[in-house]
Length: 242
Image 1: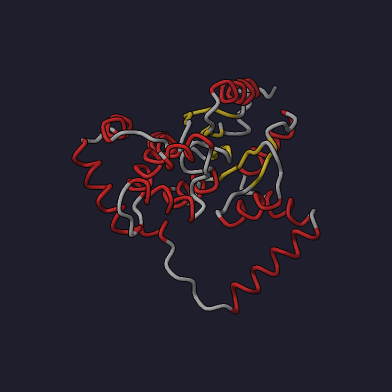
Image 2 (image 1 turned 120 degrees about the vertical axis):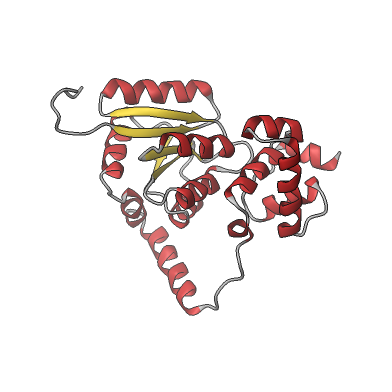
């Protein structure tokens, strides 16, 4: 453990975003015991992550890819949109190459397996907080993946500009409401979670429906799934078919 009184390094402020309380607790214990880090906030979903980031202004966010509602990739994009200087480290139980590409697209600085060694987690967080892009190195270590990235970049350069991304047309608050809707929350539950009135929730829903060309909540969730913001789970699939 480093000497906290040495004055050589400032404390790194960290936000943990994961829907498993036990995993969040383990990460908090690991980071705070090390001495260089201070866990300033915890969140279990996208809308909580936005609230915690706005309140605590972390320097690094550790985000699980598989979250209820809006998934970790889009939580990362949302937080980077609000706080461009924030460094994001994505966590996953598996290292699918598609996740690595997604992490690159949302501006993450690193990708870690959830079963990574504690020493590796601490080292990556320190490097990321210092401004290092670990994700680029991770991709370069996989030649086939690096070729895919280069191919996609070349396609992007020569192709016509893409149509407006529906995600960028939604405000941060609307994306928070969408996250709650995807989790099956009622207007009252959304109002309580976001500290707004039910009428304000209804106003946001009207705007979301209009922007996504949706008729109702089911259409909204289906649009979110089509855009890759939300993953269909067995419980959500049953709710949609009910």
